[in-house]
Every structure is written in structure tokens, then in C-alpha cells.
Amino acid sequence: MDMVEAMRVAVEVARHGSFTSASRALRISAPSVSRIVAELEADLGARYRTTRQLNLTDAGREFVQESAGLLEELDQMRGMVHDRNESPRGQLRVSCVTAFGNECLALALPEFMQRFPQLSVSVDIGNRMVDLIGEHYDVALRVGPLSDSSLIAQRISTQKIIFVASPRSVRGMGHLDRSTRSPRGRRSCRSVENGDAAIDSNTPERSSISKCRSISQ
Image (tube, rainbow, N blue to C red):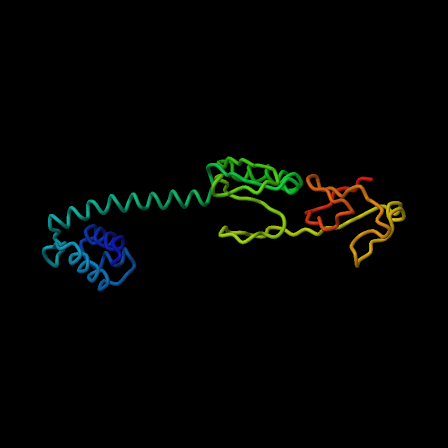
């Protein structure tokens, strides 16, 4: 038996004075109301009513009174949670990689905070892999493949890595050999930077960056 449903039925039956009227208010059939009341009496081990005219017993009157208060508190709690979901409030702690944070998140934050003024946002920008649970972060924004985790992940964007160079630089260091993924002649390009990571042309295996921002000569 669903005790919350039984409490609602008991309260409505006492309020309307009949199974039929209570069934209309609850939008269930009158036989269902009668069955639930009978199951409630069996569960409580006490009579809810004394006659078919629904004169409540002392136990029934006390049960209805207490149930009405509990149901009101339950409805208030559900409304509070619903309102919180409709309009987020409180503290939101975010961990974000530096490049994405500087180039994307920082631009989106002002509009986000205007949209949800009751939400206080704390952003930690850096490439350290934080412990979301242990360090009490609500969300982390990361770039690249994710390791196996019990956490929920959602892809929000994709990026392409594009290497560019001036004609003068290409003439100076030679064309890229696709078989070795290194410049012919092994001439050194200083670095490719994305604000946090740098890739030396002599170590092509270090290629897991999110975006190329500049090439320094």
C-alpha cells in the first residue's frame, strides 16, 4: 500500500464526507477509494469510520489531522525543490582547463550569471586534474578523451587542431614528412603554443593539445 496515497484519500474522504465526492476530487474511481480505505484500516489495525455515512472514529480523526499536516509539509518540500530546479541558486564550483576557460568560459559567464542571479559561481582555472568528489567541485570542463569514470560526462563541443606556418617558415624547415610526422632535415621550429602547452617539433609524440594559438619563431 502506498501510505502517502492512503493519507491523501483519508483526508479527502473526511473533507468531502463520501467516497464518491472524494473520488472526483482525487480523480480515481469510488471503488478504488473504498479499497484504499479498507487497506488503510487493515494496516493501522483500527477502524477509520463507524458507519457508511463516514462518521470518523477517534483514531480516524487523529489520523486525518496528522496526515493533513504531513501532506502540507510534503507539498511545500516538493514545491521548494521544484522551484530550485526552475531557478538554480546557491554555490556552483567549476574546474576548467586554462585554454578553454580563457577563450570560451570567460566569455559565457557574464550572460550565465545574469540569467541565474541567485547562483554564485566559483571558477578554478588550471590544468590540474581535480578530484570532483573529494574537493567538492560540481562540474569540471576538460579537453580530450576521458578516462573510465563513474562520473557523468557530456560532450559540449569539438575542436580541430590545425598547424599553420608562414611560407618563409616552411621554406626554412622543409615540408612535413607524413611517414615520420617530422620536418625533413630535422630543422627545429621553436614551439607551438596554446597558452599552457608547448610542442617542440623534435618531439612530435607530444601532440595532445586543444588548440593552436600562435607559432613562435
